[in-house]
Image (cartoon, rainbow, N blue to C red; front, side, top):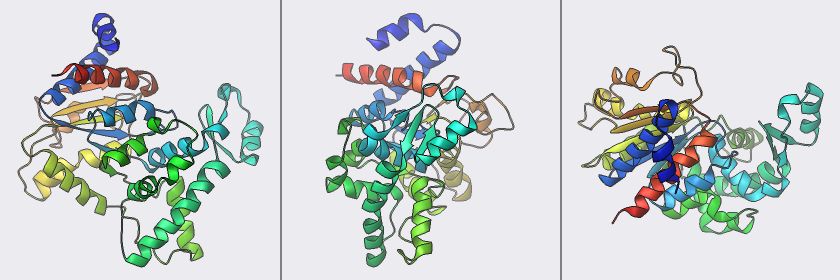
Length: 325
């Protein structure tokens, strides 16, 4: 068992931070709490969806805040996995090598290339009618709702080149999990959406809800989730996916003068160098001054590669949940 191994061997330094973070997440669930998971970087292309999907099914994750890249790349991997191109020697690539990958329409993410034609173009053709339909009906939806619609119709599953159980977006769709995507326009599909408006395929930008309006949706979720139960925050990577939702507590407490609790748990997996001038590298105690966390909030930083340590933490939590009566 992974939990037994971690409890036996992960005793000091960064290893103990991992163990304590996993134990803290487990404790939160024992007390009936909810966990928000935030995803920065390229976690979906790193196929962390395998673990995330299982955490969703086991009700260990109750909401996700992610970049537009993580939202779309889970589906790219689902429908175009066989056309991905591995580049294990990526550190040795020359500019000419990179240009050759571009000519083949292979968009590189570290050691993996996403095939534009089989991934981006295929999903674009599925989403455009959904965006157009929402525009005609006068609807505005969060970005993930359009993927949930495709999943409900079975269109994504029909194109699957991996086990659909390994897609966190499909697992989230089945659970109707809240998903928040700040800065969605900073993604491939966000760019594609803007291009459709410019070309006239769409009449305006209103069918996809983005920007500050997403904060209101997060606030509604937090009010409900924190009513009588603790809410935790597990941040994988830095950037907007973590900075955006954690600020919902001071927004509610300071700007709206509402009585809501602080986040009850915080953990960040990060390779960022600790720095008081960097959001991604700021230690958790700095968040106390912003009224996001309290002095007694369990706080953890695991300084490691998330693709190595997140599956270990996730499996630890799953094993604890499985042992509960």
